[in-house]
Amino acid sequence: MNPLNRREFLKGSTALMSLASFGLLGMDFKDREGPLQVALIGTGWYGKSDLFRLIQVADVEVVGLCDVDSKQLAEAGRLVSTRQKSGKVPALYEDYKELLAKEKPEYVLVGTPDHWHALIAIDALKSGAHVYLQKPISVDVIEGEAILAAARKYDRKVQIGTQRRSTPHLVQAKKEIIDSGKLGKISHAEVCCYYHMRNNSNPPVMPVPENLNYDLWAGPAPMLPYRGILHRGWRAFMEYGNGIVGDMCVHMLDTVRWMLDLGWPVQVTSTGGIYVQKDSVANISDTQTALFEFDELNVVWQHRTWGNPVDKDYPWAFKIYGENGMLAGSPMRADFYPEGRNNGEQIHYPVVLEKEQYPEDVTEKDNEVHAAPATREQMRDWLKAIENDTLPVADVLEGHISTASCILANMSMELDGRPLRYNPKTMKVEGDEEATALLRRPYRDGYIHPEPNKI
Image: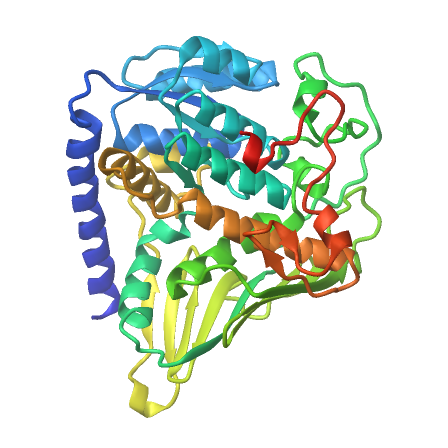
């Protein structure tokens, strides 16, 4: 199939899926009456983006929004009123617990900074809501175990925002190249990110603006001196996230795991640090390599937030190597490169855009147009799993394995490159008490770290 025909095929297939899903999920979700009662906790860029994709594919009433930044919250309320069918401004909250208690949403989207993911997700599950949780699901391994335990105990469906599993051109490439056995024996994969995305500023400490409840923003994490770079800038600090590995590797490692049906890595090893960009307040690594070892398969991660990418066509990507060729993939494209003449011709899979079907994708501020079809399909899959009582494509277990693997890489780097073998049954790093102690981050006074057996 040539690239033009493939593009038209994928567009048509996606359009049909959209219409079918809207009829099934948006209008007559089983025998329910009225729209889905939805809340968003964390109204920043990606939280709103996820919510707007859900509004595009289902009959939704956003009953509540929550954020600790009153200015951002008010603007989110205004935007939601222009996008949802009722035209209403949702109830606005600073405290997510108050939102859950008063609005009792059936579906909760979590788009907060990473250090809040676990507590909010668990409380939402306890309240009876199904949850769409952004990646990485946690900032330490035991948080992830607790979210998983809560999802199973309260029998709620949790979809993780690792939407490469729903990216149309990658779904097609998986089917045609991986599932068909076209690559032959697969024993190596590479994942990478070479974006210059690390915040390298060095702003002074400054007063906290009146519109921000900074104490509540920090929550269970350390409250660092305020420097005015919280919106997206919080990713520069390990206190609030998991660095480039937690932000970007989690996507690509998860994609490889999904394509090759991999579970937990047997062993994780990583080295790196701040080698080049030493002048900023950021404390995340600017250079890091990680090795995720599976049975007869290695997955190698590399990121640099400086210099040139290894492959200009694939600056954030995965490459899966088999004896008969290689499959490269990213959010923007995929390519099969055969090894030798006997294994076929190169096959190109272009990104699928739905700008004609969803023109608001183009006009929405900061929207990732190329990622919108994947997120919409991720939302449809979540709702379908709820209706059919099945696990969604990015179930919390899968999100936990990918997240925890990345956290283990950071732990290994912190421990001078020591190999780590995590046992999810015992929830310990085998033979390593020092590493096991790092599976739980200390919480700030007033907050209690969730435990899998106490949720």
